Length: 208
Image (cartoon, rainbow, N blue to C red):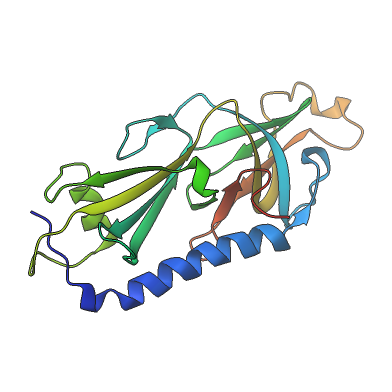
């Protein structure tokens, strides 16, 4: 049975709103670049189509995706946001003949409301209990209430924008004879985030 103490949620609500604004702000501030030209070490914003060999299951709907974000609210009108979590797996971002590797270990999503699938879950629903534990939400101490969740995902085949720190790794898949390359062996772009500054995956229209 799910019971939540509303009085202790103010800090969590402010924190999740701040994270949402921060992800869009980082997306807007990132320098736009083509996959082929993204400079080493810069925080860049690039676009491409998702290709993936592996996916993960979104926690509520079970949909296969490369990244998801789950927003949790009290199941009442005008209720605050209690928390959110995001997760992802590494995938390839493809633009024409150029491919980058996206490391989604630290990720946030910037999505529109139209992308999110909502569901009202009853107290004790096994799909939401593990999420609440991971978010560190309050214990069962007052009246039971439903929880409303909104889930957004990105899937293989979609065109997205990614904002992250650019790094160029040796592309072992194409190296044959290093001395045959005038400017050294070929490299492949890798995009990643950190715990303090997560990678952002967004719809192309998520930010101007």
